[in-house]
Length: 454
Image (tube, rainbow, N blue to C red):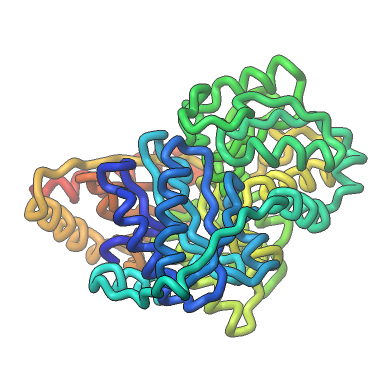
């Protein structure tokens, strides 16, 4: 796809992502959906209102009435779409910096569109092919209040409120000035937790921290947890579809670790887990221990959603899916990422641990060593030469390669992956093992092979 990446369209606002492009995407989506009503929602970014207006205009121009939801978390959009039976054009750049914005398209089942439907929308944009209305059939706009309230109520009904309340937890919440500012602190309070917050005012400039919930951006949350004797810290990205954690000591919990811990708690023999090709060894080991299958896809939420749907349609139970960046799906709940729900499921783990701290709960999944290397290239020819060298190395390795997205070699107790970046002129190399020296060696050997192609 030329326009839609692994999780919608994103770019620097008013440079790559323009009102004209958003207008066209909305017209194309409205044409493909052929729906009487379509919702429009946004996160807190400063350009959100501008692009939401463009999206509403595009939808009305092809005859769709528009429900304007305002600033809501992405999972609240999913809940609204499913309950109201309408699709949505969502204006968000998720975890990207404040100068970015983007578009996600959500179906009337509350799930982001699958690859085949996105391709139909994209083709309409590229061909400038829309079913325009006239002055008599143009859509109208209605402001909708209460989407966040309905989402909160629905989430609270989907978790074990009694167990979480009885655990008497103190939770530090960092919504990162994003859309979760209007929902997550309230959710955890209503679950019976004592809640303290940082960066919890909606602000599209993201003054307290960058939107992506990675360790370097969560120092304030780490300090808050450590100095307030909180049991856990929970952080989100700008649109609140990720949930990541800080342990009781103020230390960051790697997303692969929390993913593995939550997977171990909900898997039965014969189940499947869907994840991306850079999946952690700790999840591989959890699947093996539970006699569950692990299905790998190209990196990106859209690919994970598409494969999960395929498995569900074939009758396979998929209780959990996602990536190690905090973007975890619980498909029986909804096939969309929900940062607050992810946090609540982690609180259920703590509640079941009879007072054990986060560091003890995650300990069985934390003793792994992950290595990441980047090799830069000058142009497409050099990139192709380096990838050819990587392919030659892989073909001689004593492991069967997975070519879903790049080349992944699984050795049972360790793995290495090489793939071109989708956003930068770099070849990315990942390796992981319970043995730090083995992970370093796998990454180094692959890097030497890649660089031999210069």
